[in-house]
Each structure stands twice: as C-alpha cells, then as structure tokens.
Image (cartoon, rainbow, N blue to C red):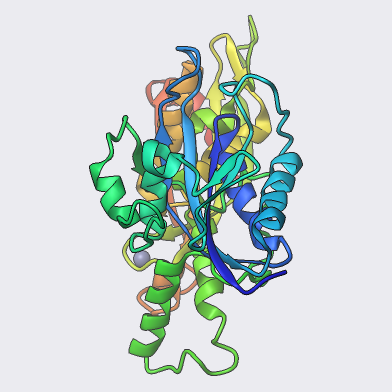
Amino acid sequence: MSEPTSAIIVIGSNIQKERNIPEAVRLLRRAPGVIVDRVSRIFESPSVDGPPDAPDFFNAAVLLHTDLDIDELRAVAHSVEDELGRVRTADPNAPRTADVDVVYYGEMAEDREGKPIPDPGALEAAHVALPIADVAPEWIHPVDGRTTLEIAEQIDNDGVRPIMAIHLSSPYSPRRPDDFDDVSDVYAPRLEALIRQQLIELGEDPDREGLDRTPLRVAKALDYLTSGYSTSVEEVVNDAIFDAEGAEEMVLLRDIEFYSMCEHHMLPFFGTAAIAYLPKGKIIGLSKIARVLDVFARRLQVQERLTNQVAGALEDILDPHGVAVVLEGRHLCMMMRGVQKQESAMITSAMRGTFKDNPRTRSEFLELIRD
Ligand code: ZN
C-alpha cells in the first residue's frame, strides 16, 4: 500500500473485443484498491506487426487512482488478463483476448524489472498514445515533458481512430448490466455530467440524498437502452443461419416483446412484434429473430423505421421468398402527455416479396397473428 497515486492503464484486444474491452474495464472497477476515474472512447487499430490477416485491435485507456504500489497494480492488470482467459505465448503478436498494461504510474520513471514505466508505447505507439490523450490530455510524460495530447498530436497515427458508438455496456457482454443500481464510482463521466446539469435545469438539487447517484444510474440505463448502436445484425446472427433444402413453409414468430425509445422525445415505446418469412433454402434460429429486433429497437427510433429495418435485415441475411413484420406499440410520449387516447396502440407493418405480392400469403399471415 502507498499514497493514492493516479495511473493510466491501456487495454487492447483482438478476440471478442466488443466483449473483452468492457469486461476488462468492469473488472478493473471491481479490483480492491483501484478507483476508476474515467475511460476513454474505444479506438480501433489495425494489427501492425501480426500476420496480414490478423484481426484489428480495439484499445481503450483507463484513468484511475489507487493506493496500490506499482507492482501490486501490475498484479491486478495480470489478474484481469487471466480472468479474461488470456493464454500467454512466446509470440508477442498472437491474437489475445486482452492486454492490460500499466502505462503511467504517477510521475514514476524507472525501469522496473525490465518493464519500464512509463511504458515505451506511450511515446511510440498510436494505439497507446491516442486513447491516453482521450482520457487524460493534460497528463505530462515524466521524462519527455510533453502532455499526452501533444504526444498524440505529433505521433504517426497508423490508422488508429476512435469508434464513438461502442458502448461499455453492450447487452451482448457476457454479464449484462442487469442491475442499474450496482454502482461503481464513475461510469460515463461526460454523460453523467450532462445528466447532473439537466437535473439542475429542472430545478432539482442533484446533491440531495436520493439524487446523488442518479446521473450514474441514468447513464447506465441510457447506455443499455441504446446498446443497439454498439452491435450489428451480423454479430447477433453470427453462425445461426442454416441451409434447409426444401423448407418452404412460412416461419412465424409472434408476441415478441420489444422496448424502444422514440427519437422525438426520448421516451419509451414498447409492444409486441410478429415476424414471418417464407424460406428459400435458408432458415435462422428462432431466438435470433428476436435479437435482430433488439438490435434496431435498442436505439432512438420511430416505429415505422424500426419495422422496415427488421424486415430489411431479414431479407438481407436470408434472401427469402418474402418477409412480413407487424409491430404494435404504445408510446409513452403520447400516453403520458395526453396527446391521444391513452389506450391507443400504433400498428405498423412491412410486407416484402410474397407477402406483398400474393394476397393469399398475406391473409394467411394476418390470420395467424390475429388474437
Ligand atoms: Zn415521441
């Protein structure tokens, strides 16, 4: 144990990186003696030294303070790597689930057991320097004397770029952020600050008991409710498409719950969906249909577009004879503001292919989804 010291850790991953980066941050947050102050955006960087087909890396920097000494902090970093299943090999360019490296430790500048602090990557590697400048631009390199921002501005950026849309609480993470009250100290500092400001604008006292952790909770909730931005149909469907020669009968899933937020008021709308397709040699796992719906529902939406996007995505991945999507939604922006009758539901539909062209197919579908 020692005096509280600020430190910067950089995380890198090119295996299941969408999961491993957020999970590494979460594990750091939970480590005893470590308080995470801020997390950078996630940066994507081409694999520089590996084989030509090596997957790109994601990198993120974490600013923290700790009463652990440097060796104890490095042990924490190692344990996070271990927990994420990293197998250390002699090949430094082998794909890895997570690299977790202490790059800066206060103003320390020394070679500790053959591993210098600061890590040389702070000056030499864009995938280290850029995330650090994002999370701690004023931090001064104790030997070089420049700020991390100056270093980042002067380094060859090697194609490293921030990916704004990656969220740190993807619902497809191995452990979902089920409990928004499971508070850590800081989650999304810029968003939290904005929500705090919003409370003030509303005439509230953000420091009163009951509200003091609200910005954190709202940030987590919003992050989750908009997590569709951080995933894609390809990722969700993955390998769940099967060849099914001769399967020509309608596949229908109905009463699928969905929850979304209207883009005009950022208030929820929610309801049920019925989704059908007529296969042409390819079928998809049933549970995946609901997840495709979620990819588009967990964004700011209008119901018409949501309906069309789901239909379009199924057309793209299955190339079926036809697709039909019907959504029935209740919109809190109408219900709570008394704009319309509170019980009113909005129904939207998208009919493609056979469902559009053949009235018999369409009426068979409509018959099947009728209560
Ligand atoms: Zn609305």
